[in-house]
Length: 461
Image 1 (cartoon, rainbow, N blue to C red):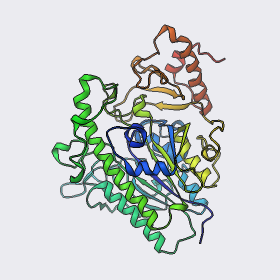
Image 2: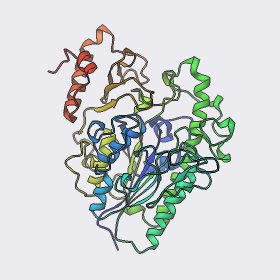
Image 3: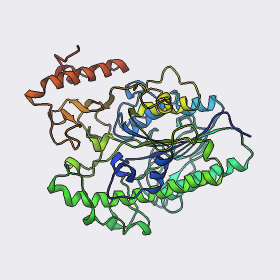
Image 4: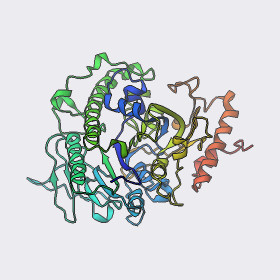
């Protein structure tokens, strides 16, 4: 029985930067499964995180709304259960919806902090009302432990400990779930399935010498630090630390790629590849030593630029590239649009399905991606800013002088020359100030006082 609409598989990686894939030119890591996926679908080369940290980005992904609208404005907020998500829209359209893995949109309950001899790790418990409308649930709020992860399902606080390595185990759950659906006679009802990996986010639980990037034994000898090619914006003093960090990071990515390959091969085994829209994405990147920084949260390219690959055999052109700008808030509306499911009016992201299906000379929907950042609930990252990423420029207006940045990527791809404070770039700065202000007004956010103060005199012509 054929389906009127495709199945949908979202593969969500955590902290996977655009640059860390073979298909995107990284000389250090092999990602054959993801590279093959790109060769079978559309690789979006200008996709950016609208909020480079887990919780606000994930809320935008699920709601199609910016953080100041959906209520998850800071890392540490949680998604109001009254908010509709993309899962509600798919369910209303007749899809069966399911979720596996990290959620990180619920309050941190401490339910996993029982000792001695009890549960370990961080919060596995996500109340059914806080699961974003997904009908079938095999998730946890946050673990950050690759060998000690618990998930919840059903209505009660009953932890299920994952056996073995987290990334492998989550893939096993998705494979089993999709197999059960295929065997249950559910053919004809499309499904929307999300697998949300914590990899390659730093974690714990491995051998002591693995630090924050534990992997199973077969990956531990990969990517010797001394042989890595670093990006030119890693300062010499930070090279040793960056090499150690990136070696572990690439090992996690190698395991992640193998698991993505297993999952996609299973779609082949189920004979469902042709009727499944696959969307691979990440919430944000990782600095990896660039500019002397380690993680994300900051408005540099390594933190903001993320992979986005969509495959739908027979509908999306295999091996195509799309260089139009994409924001995290666009992914939900675009997925709905590709499936012919109505996009709610309250979604602020663009439905870019026509962009992906249209000829390459179609007019782009975006001229800029708006990036928001506030301080967190946890006391780190206290450097609020607002930024725009255009096809050519990154422009950041911040409370603190350190993060007031303007880069011209056409001549400065590694962001080594900050134009913000230069007298000869005043006209450019004012022009980009106007783009930022327009972006904020367009989405209904009152510009913070420091933005108004720094953008006085912006060129609005």
